[in-house]
Image 1 (cartoon, rainbow, N blue to C red):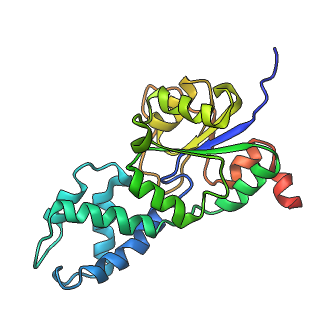
Image 2 (cartoon, rainbow, N blue to C red; image 1 turned 180 degrees about the vertical axis):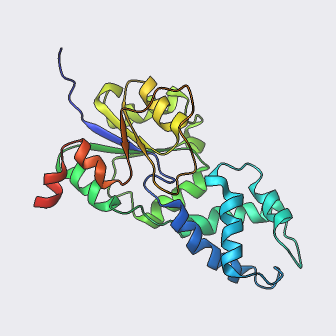
Image 3 (cartoon, rainbow, N blue to C red; image 1 turned 135 degrees about the horizontal axis):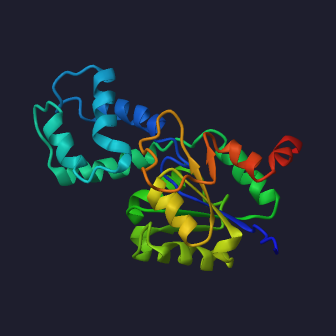
Length: 234
């Protein structure tokens, strides 16, 4: 059987290239300061716990309403105001996952094309990308809000492959969401890698075939791809 050469690596953004929990820890302090006059007194540790719970790993469509209802306010802002605030401030505080820049540099030095495929609004996701300084490290950034389709739709993976000028079978895909990232990428023919750690929000769904590759850190990706020695030489 002919071996298919790997030419590209695609990454999810939130909780894959970024560390969402660490970002939330930073965000909680800023949130407490920015809303100090509107919130009733609350310990930062308790506020942080509530924000993490309400955020639900970024998958709570009621987040702005829950923030209004589950926090004690002196003066309650509108849901629209809270959501705009979250998109702006959270994006500005995005924390890179440990090893992100080293992994991207190693992939680049080994002639891999690199892409980001993320669900989310164009505004907030672009702010994260710019805050992290990702544009100079990747070859393509595909944001669902900008292209009109989102994971797990195969169309968004096809879009990313066209931008990188590769076939799906030549790509690795790394993401934290079992269905939207790992299973979806696998179904279009990519080598899918599930990244998870102690703070991963998503459990692997029962009845779904286990991923071929599972990592706890981005640096482990280089071990799987047998590029770890390139990082050490660098």
